[in-house]
Image (cartoon, rainbow over all chains, first blue to last red):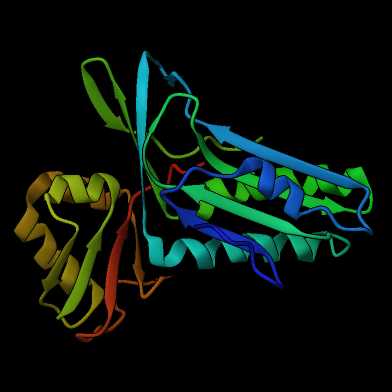
Length: 150
Length: 78
């Protein structure tokens, strides 16, 4: 059961379905006029490959939490006005269109919410110890490193 | 001696995710792992980071039984 913390940022790695709506609700705060939520989901194709049917996510689970906390802390250093920050990653075997990651942030105004949300997902993809094995009709392969963010 | 953790393509190449491996520093542990798991594993290791207890570590970092050496291939979460 995923339960948000009473204080601090909400970070989690879990094999349960990610509650995107509950996460977006949790970041709402009376002093914040903006909420940005990003959901990442399993896609039916990848670089040079079509027909992906599932993705299995594997994590170094002991260190996903600390790395997610570090991403949130990095966002707070850059945008001190942030309200709440939530970063959750799912692991296990996921079908196409299942949500694999959710990021939600709130802030007084939209500019920093958009910027911080983008920073969080980009930094998560570069720094959190998670790997995905893509499976298609007649094979499977580990995905390459996350695309470099322009 | 250290506890070795392998993930993603490194785990697949070695056909195990956890092992106890002899060595007094990171380089020694990785040399023993290459001997044990062969060239497929060595190829993955060549493109991976190595962490000790969750932090990036140099090859000369000394390790003891309670240390965890992890092979971290390029991450692909999200």
